[in-house]
Amino acid sequence: MTHTLTPIERLKQVMARLRDKTAGCPWDVEQDFATIAPYTIEEAYEVADAIERDDMDALREELGDLLFQVIFHARMAEEDGLFDFDAVAGELAAKMIRRHPHVFGSAEIRDAEQQTEAWEAHKARERQSKPGDDASALANVPVGLPALTRAQKIQKRASRVGFDWGDAAPALDKVAEEVKELRAELAAVKPAPDRAEEELGDLLFAVVNVARLAGADAETALRRATAKFERRFRQVEDMLAARGKTPDQSTLAEMDALWDEAKRAERAAAGR
Image (cartoon, rainbow, N blue to C red; front, top):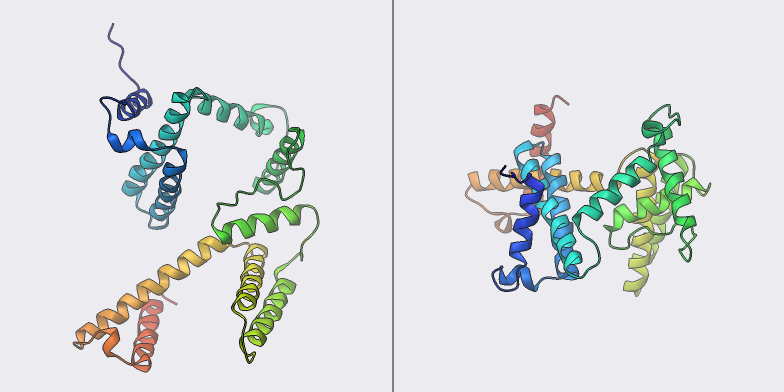
């Protein structure tokens, strides 16, 4: 009987061939965990981008690219005698079962919010049970995360032990306070770049806090705001091109007026 490979088995074979030191791809053979890590992060962002654009064809492709990153890392680990893809998948399945006792056991969970609380409590217990691990409430938040995402995760961790504003209003007051401090620093006779940077960092951290307490994701909010800016600026460029001009041939006042026009048109199209 001919054994037909499953898609994941075929993918693992493809990866093994790519890494073959004699018959493989020279580029793939040269890579290690550190050189591949940036591509792993990039692929995760491309998955998020496909979701943001609601492009399911792109999402299917990008999920494949992200899976390839997992296969790549697992293959390198297998070559070093550390673990293989099956170990990764098996450990993940066991962890999901362990962290969902309301699905695979007798525990009861009322809603998604309670599940989130239970999930984080379980993770905290797992961290505390590992000898020699950092027992801080802020432990194991990856330093390689985007700054906004990491700030929000750090704030959530502190919130779980009671160190929090409670709602967005006082956090917004903190933003106003940080804006005042940044203005004062920038208005100094000889502004110190490192001090201005510190005050700006405090302001950004405070804004992330407002986003979290308002129920928004800071990273998503900024990504969408950036996409909106890009969309409107491109409209300004198109309107200028219709006049035979480019942005560098235009005044700020002219571009600002076109920006307002693009903004009004966009809102009208959205029914706002």
